[in-house]
Length: 340
View 1: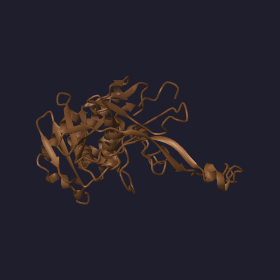
View 2 (view 1 turned 45 degrees about the horizontal axis):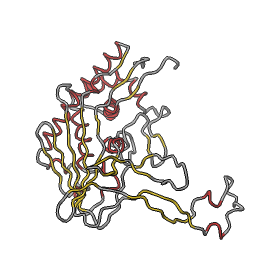
View 3 (view 1 turned 45 degrees about the vertical axis):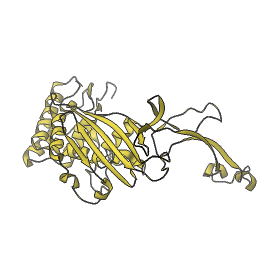
C-alpha cells in the first residue's frame, strides 16, 4: 500500500485532566493547593565549572562555586491534616480507529478496512482493551504520585459497570491479577465494543484514592514558563480552579501517555514504550522503531495487505498487528504529503 496525500485518523482515547483533592480528619473533601517557595540550592552542573571543551572556567573559583543558588519554585504536598488523597479523571472511548477520518485514496480505504475486520475477527481489539485498562487499574497514570501506603483505583462507566481494585501495589508482581476483579470481563468487553462500534462509545470515570504519608510531596504536571525576571518561578504547575481555589493537575497528555505505555511488541523489549510511530525510549533518548530497522509505523502500515493475510492465515494477531492497531487508536496525520 502506498500512503496517500491526505490520510489521517482521529484519536479513539480521550482522557481529561486529573484533578487532586484531599479529605481531612473530619472527612471533608477539599481542593489541593500549592505554594511558591524560595530555596537556596547549590551551584551544580557541568556548565558551572567547565566550558564546552571541559576546560575549567576562570570564573569557577572555590568561593564562587560555594555561593548559594537562590531560585523560586512551586511546591505541592499533602496537607498535614489529610487522611486520604484523591485524583480523578475521565476517559472517552470511541471507534475512530476503524476507518480514517480523512483519506483520498479508495484503495487505501479498502486495505485499511480489510485489516480492521481481520484484526477484530481474531479479538485483537479485546486484547488492546485489556492492555489499556490494566494501565488504568494499576494506577500507572499517577506517575510519581502512585507511591503511597495504599492505593485503590475505581472505574465507573456510563454502561452501569463499576470495577474496584484495592491496594493495587500488592498485586504488582502477580500476572493477570486483574482477572479476579468483579466486573472486569464485562468492562473489557464494553471497552472493546467502544473501540469497534460507533454506536457504543464508552465514558469512564476513574478515581484513585491514596492513603498518604505525612506531608508527602505531590508531583503535578509542570507547565512551560517563560521567565520574565529573576523573581519568576523556575518550575510552575499546570492548574485548574476547584471550588474557587487554584489547584494543580495531572495534564491530559501525561495521563494519556501512561495509558498508552503498552508497546512491548518487539524483540528484546525490557519494558513497554508509549505507543508511537517510532517507538521512542525517553530514558535512552533513542527511537527503537526506526526506518533503519523497519519496525516503525510507516514501514508497517505500507505492508498492511501482507499483514492482513498473515492474520487470516494463522487466525490470530501478531505483534506487528498490535502495533499498527494501537497507532490507529492513537490517531494522527499519516499522509505522505505532496512534496515527498
